Length: 117
Length: 110
Image (cartoon, rainbow over all chains, first blue to last red; front, top):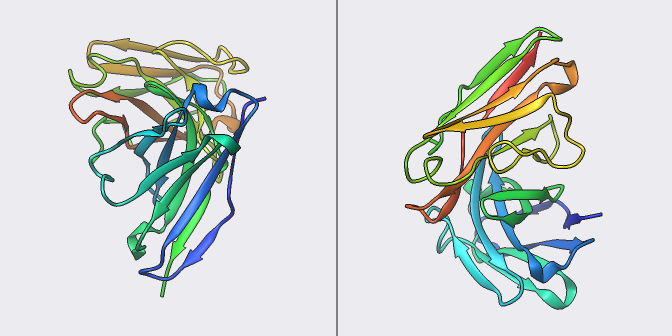
Protein backbone atom coordinates (compact mmCIF):
# COMPACT_ATOMS: atom_id res chain seq x y z
CA UNK A 1 0.00 0.00 0.00
CA UNK A 2 1.36 3.39 -1.03
CA UNK A 3 1.60 5.75 1.93
CA UNK A 4 2.98 9.22 2.48
CA UNK A 5 3.25 10.01 6.19
CA UNK A 6 3.95 13.60 7.20
CA UNK A 7 5.44 15.04 10.36
CA UNK A 8 3.23 16.56 13.04
CA UNK A 9 1.76 20.02 13.49
CA UNK A 10 4.13 22.89 14.22
CA UNK A 11 3.70 26.21 16.04
CA UNK A 12 6.44 28.73 15.33
CA UNK A 13 7.21 32.42 15.76
CA UNK A 14 7.86 34.80 12.86
CA UNK A 15 11.49 34.70 11.79
CA UNK A 16 12.07 31.14 12.96
CA UNK A 17 13.17 28.34 10.65
CA UNK A 18 11.31 25.10 10.05
CA UNK A 19 11.61 21.83 8.17
CA UNK A 20 8.68 19.44 7.77
CA UNK A 21 8.93 15.94 6.38
CA UNK A 22 7.09 13.39 4.26
CA UNK A 23 8.07 9.71 4.37
CA UNK A 24 7.06 7.47 1.49
CA UNK A 25 6.47 3.74 1.75
CA UNK A 26 4.88 0.94 -0.25
CA UNK A 27 6.57 1.92 -3.52
CA UNK A 28 9.99 2.68 -4.97
CA UNK A 29 10.64 6.15 -3.53
CA UNK A 30 13.19 7.07 -6.20
CA UNK A 31 10.82 6.20 -9.07
CA UNK A 32 8.32 9.00 -8.43
CA UNK A 33 8.67 12.71 -7.87
CA UNK A 34 7.21 14.22 -4.67
CA UNK A 35 5.32 17.52 -4.70
CA UNK A 36 4.31 19.95 -1.97
CA UNK A 37 0.92 21.70 -1.96
CA UNK A 38 -0.19 24.57 0.27
CA UNK A 39 -3.72 25.16 1.50
CA UNK A 40 -4.23 28.36 3.45
CA UNK A 41 -7.14 28.48 5.93
CA UNK A 42 -10.43 28.28 4.08
CA UNK A 43 -8.72 28.50 0.68
CA UNK A 44 -7.87 26.28 -2.27
CA UNK A 45 -4.87 24.20 -3.29
CA UNK A 46 -1.62 25.82 -4.43
CA UNK A 47 1.20 23.75 -5.96
CA UNK A 48 4.56 24.79 -4.54
CA UNK A 49 7.03 22.58 -6.35
CA UNK A 50 8.37 19.10 -6.78
CA UNK A 51 11.53 17.03 -6.37
CA UNK A 52 12.96 13.94 -8.04
CA UNK A 53 14.25 11.91 -5.09
CA UNK A 54 16.60 9.97 -7.38
CA UNK A 55 18.88 12.95 -7.96
CA UNK A 56 17.25 15.77 -5.90
CA UNK A 57 16.45 17.82 -8.99
CA UNK A 58 13.81 20.37 -8.03
CA UNK A 59 11.25 22.49 -9.87
CA UNK A 60 9.36 25.30 -8.14
CA UNK A 61 6.22 27.23 -8.92
CA UNK A 62 7.14 30.84 -9.71
CA UNK A 63 4.97 31.88 -6.74
CA UNK A 64 7.13 29.94 -4.28
CA UNK A 65 10.60 30.09 -5.86
CA UNK A 66 13.03 31.59 -3.37
CA UNK A 67 10.60 31.38 -0.45
CA UNK A 68 10.93 27.69 0.39
CA UNK A 69 13.39 24.86 -0.20
CA UNK A 70 12.41 21.33 -1.19
CA UNK A 71 14.87 18.52 -0.54
CA UNK A 72 14.95 14.76 -0.16
CA UNK A 73 16.98 11.99 1.46
CA UNK A 74 16.51 8.88 -0.66
CA UNK A 75 18.29 6.71 1.90
CA UNK A 76 15.32 7.12 4.25
CA UNK A 77 12.61 7.69 1.60
CA UNK A 78 11.82 11.14 2.94
CA UNK A 79 11.13 14.49 1.31
CA UNK A 80 11.32 17.82 3.09
CA UNK A 81 9.90 21.33 2.87
CA UNK A 82 11.93 24.02 4.57
CA UNK A 83 11.67 27.70 5.48
CA UNK A 84 14.60 29.82 6.68
CA UNK A 85 12.48 32.65 8.09
CA UNK A 86 8.78 32.08 8.64
CA UNK A 87 6.12 34.74 8.27
CA UNK A 88 2.57 34.85 9.61
CA UNK A 89 1.38 34.41 6.03
CA UNK A 90 3.02 30.95 5.96
CA UNK A 91 0.27 29.71 8.29
CA UNK A 92 -1.38 26.89 6.34
CA UNK A 93 -1.84 23.18 5.89
CA UNK A 94 0.92 21.65 3.79
CA UNK A 95 0.46 18.42 1.88
CA UNK A 96 3.01 16.26 0.16
CA UNK A 97 1.89 14.14 -2.77
CA UNK A 98 3.36 11.60 -5.16
CA UNK A 99 3.70 13.35 -8.51
CA UNK A 100 3.07 11.67 -11.85
CA UNK A 101 2.90 14.61 -14.27
CA UNK A 102 0.43 16.25 -14.22
CA UNK A 103 -1.29 14.29 -11.47
CA UNK A 104 -0.76 14.00 -7.72
CA UNK A 105 -1.91 10.44 -7.19
CA UNK A 106 -1.30 9.78 -3.49
CA UNK A 107 -1.37 12.42 -0.76
CA UNK A 108 -0.01 12.69 2.74
CA UNK A 109 -2.30 13.49 5.65
CA UNK A 110 -1.09 17.08 5.86
CA UNK A 111 1.03 19.11 8.29
CA UNK A 112 -0.50 22.19 9.90
CA UNK A 113 2.00 25.03 10.30
CA UNK A 114 0.97 27.94 12.51
CA UNK A 115 3.16 31.04 12.64
CA UNK A 116 2.22 33.48 15.36
CA UNK A 117 3.97 35.81 17.74
CA UNK B 1 -7.19 34.31 -8.70
CA UNK B 2 -6.72 30.71 -9.83
CA UNK B 3 -5.40 29.86 -13.30
CA UNK B 4 -8.24 27.37 -13.78
CA UNK B 5 -11.82 28.58 -13.27
CA UNK B 6 -14.44 26.54 -11.41
CA UNK B 7 -17.86 27.54 -10.07
CA UNK B 8 -17.62 28.24 -6.32
CA UNK B 9 -20.54 25.98 -5.50
CA UNK B 10 -23.04 23.51 -6.93
CA UNK B 11 -25.90 21.67 -5.31
CA UNK B 12 -28.32 18.88 -6.10
CA UNK B 13 -30.63 16.45 -4.37
CA UNK B 14 -29.65 12.91 -3.34
CA UNK B 15 -29.81 10.51 -6.28
CA UNK B 16 -29.51 13.28 -8.83
CA UNK B 17 -26.63 14.14 -11.15
CA UNK B 18 -24.31 17.14 -11.01
CA UNK B 19 -21.55 18.46 -13.24
CA UNK B 20 -18.62 20.70 -12.28
CA UNK B 21 -16.83 22.68 -14.95
CA UNK B 22 -13.17 23.67 -15.14
CA UNK B 23 -12.07 26.27 -17.66
CA UNK B 24 -8.49 26.98 -18.67
CA UNK B 25 -6.42 28.01 -21.65
CA UNK B 26 -4.18 26.69 -24.42
CA UNK B 27 -1.16 26.62 -22.08
CA UNK B 28 -2.80 24.27 -19.59
CA UNK B 29 -5.98 22.26 -20.29
CA UNK B 30 -5.52 22.79 -24.01
CA UNK B 31 -2.26 20.82 -24.01
CA UNK B 32 -2.27 18.68 -20.87
CA UNK B 33 -4.53 16.11 -19.30
CA UNK B 34 -6.79 17.04 -16.40
CA UNK B 35 -7.09 15.47 -12.95
CA UNK B 36 -9.89 15.87 -10.43
CA UNK B 37 -9.57 15.69 -6.64
CA UNK B 38 -12.11 15.30 -3.85
CA UNK B 39 -11.46 16.88 -0.47
CA UNK B 40 -13.88 15.76 2.22
CA UNK B 41 -14.16 18.14 5.20
CA UNK B 42 -11.06 18.04 7.39
CA UNK B 43 -9.19 15.54 5.21
CA UNK B 44 -6.47 15.49 2.57
CA UNK B 45 -7.38 15.66 -1.11
CA UNK B 46 -7.90 12.36 -2.89
CA UNK B 47 -7.45 11.63 -6.61
CA UNK B 48 -10.80 10.96 -8.34
CA UNK B 49 -9.99 11.22 -12.05
CA UNK B 50 -6.70 11.29 -13.95
CA UNK B 51 -5.81 11.65 -17.63
CA UNK B 52 -9.16 13.41 -18.22
CA UNK B 53 -11.42 10.40 -17.74
CA UNK B 54 -9.66 7.53 -15.96
CA UNK B 55 -10.62 6.42 -12.45
CA UNK B 56 -8.06 5.07 -9.97
CA UNK B 57 -8.81 1.70 -8.44
CA UNK B 58 -11.56 1.99 -5.85
CA UNK B 59 -13.27 5.07 -7.30
CA UNK B 60 -16.88 4.19 -8.21
CA UNK B 61 -18.11 4.67 -11.77
CA UNK B 62 -20.57 7.29 -10.48
CA UNK B 63 -17.64 9.66 -11.02
CA UNK B 64 -16.66 10.52 -14.60
CA UNK B 65 -14.50 13.07 -16.37
CA UNK B 66 -14.32 14.59 -19.81
CA UNK B 67 -12.30 17.22 -21.63
CA UNK B 68 -12.96 19.32 -24.70
CA UNK B 69 -10.61 21.99 -25.94
CA UNK B 70 -9.65 24.19 -22.99
CA UNK B 71 -12.38 22.98 -20.64
CA UNK B 72 -13.01 19.90 -18.55
CA UNK B 73 -16.01 18.55 -16.68
CA UNK B 74 -16.47 16.28 -13.68
CA UNK B 75 -19.76 14.41 -13.49
CA UNK B 76 -21.22 12.72 -10.44
CA UNK B 77 -24.35 10.58 -10.69
CA UNK B 78 -26.47 9.00 -7.97
CA UNK B 79 -25.48 11.71 -5.50
CA UNK B 80 -25.04 10.68 -1.87
CA UNK B 81 -24.69 12.84 1.23
CA UNK B 82 -21.19 11.42 1.56
CA UNK B 83 -20.24 13.16 -1.70
CA UNK B 84 -20.45 16.57 0.02
CA UNK B 85 -16.93 17.89 -0.41
CA UNK B 86 -14.74 20.37 -2.22
CA UNK B 87 -13.72 19.32 -5.72
CA UNK B 88 -10.62 20.61 -7.52
CA UNK B 89 -9.40 20.29 -11.09
CA UNK B 90 -5.69 20.33 -11.83
CA UNK B 91 -3.30 20.16 -14.75
CA UNK B 92 0.17 21.21 -15.94
CA UNK B 93 0.67 24.73 -17.23
CA UNK B 94 3.46 24.93 -19.80
CA UNK B 95 3.82 28.72 -19.52
CA UNK B 96 4.31 28.59 -15.75
CA UNK B 97 6.08 25.20 -15.74
CA UNK B 98 3.92 24.32 -12.78
CA UNK B 99 0.89 22.33 -11.77
CA UNK B 100 -2.16 24.59 -11.52
CA UNK B 101 -5.43 24.00 -9.70
CA UNK B 102 -8.88 25.45 -9.98
CA UNK B 103 -10.23 27.45 -7.07
CA UNK B 104 -12.39 24.55 -5.96
CA UNK B 105 -16.13 23.84 -6.06
CA UNK B 106 -18.14 23.09 -2.93
CA UNK B 107 -20.75 20.39 -3.57
CA UNK B 108 -23.83 20.42 -1.38
CA UNK B 109 -26.20 17.46 -1.49
CA UNK B 110 -29.50 18.91 -0.37
